[in-house]
Image (cartoon, rainbow, N blue to C red):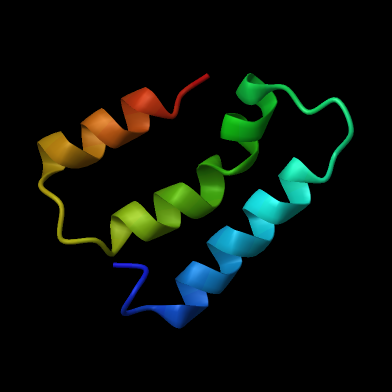
Length: 61
């Protein structure tokens, strides 16, 4: 999905870089911080409902 959608790829990269730049960033905060953009990506993906659920479950701090 991100290979075909430069807008989403760039937004996801920007969010991840911004979060990684925060001193003392912990993994739970990092995961929560990228949740909104991840949900946007999943909403337009070709994943099944079950696959989306699994991804969201893995990314829920």
